[in-house]
Length: 310
Image 1 (tube, rainbow, N blue to C red):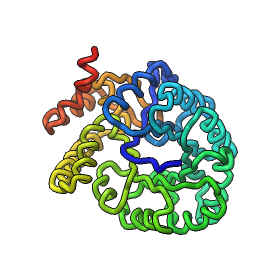
Image 2: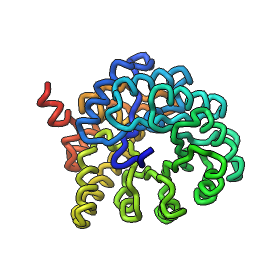
Image 3: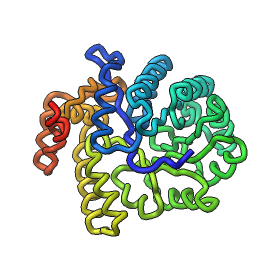
Image 4: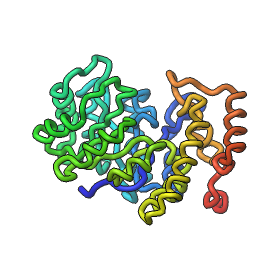
């Protein structure tokens, strides 16, 4: 498998007014994301509320994204679950849908305290789809498991034949850099903090997975282009805009707020499921006002290409 490169959108999951999956909205979402320049799709992850979906719902959603994408961009399906057996089954299903890779967080209700146990768990998950590339999803802020990834990669490489890398969502660029450099760059280490993308690019990132790529992919593509061209001043300016945007959204329940922004952009994904906290009407108004005052009015309306098509 070739390395995953560029901007990979961690997709949102559309629900209807009753809180059920609304699969008919997946197709328009995929079209808009691809039109805005994302380079891949990461489905059923933290952004997509994968842990709030049933196993059956996750299978339905993965299949719908695969059908809508139709092989046009890399599709990665997150299969992490507190049940290792269910995670392995989700991996098997994702592979049958045509996912180019699967990724999994670790079981986290019972704390994992050693790298050896983490490797044992991930080996069983990855074995559910032994011919499909596997990425461990390292996100200690949510799992509570913050074990050294260098040790994990070294040990897991000998146990998991289809291990290709890690989705690294921790604000520790020095640890990330060490993983990127391990064994002469053997592993594909995807970056997961949108507001620190430029720092990751500086230490060798080739691919990144992010929530805010759903609403502002052109900004990040411009940053990436500036970095490649050696225009660091421009790249820093664009990263600052990303930070400023995220600082506004983060004043509210983040993913529910992002779903409101997507609705303003023409993609109604419904509300987030509990336990994510919904925004109150006054908060929705405040979010929009703050974005407009901060110079992000374009985020509160459909992208130009979409508006023109309508």
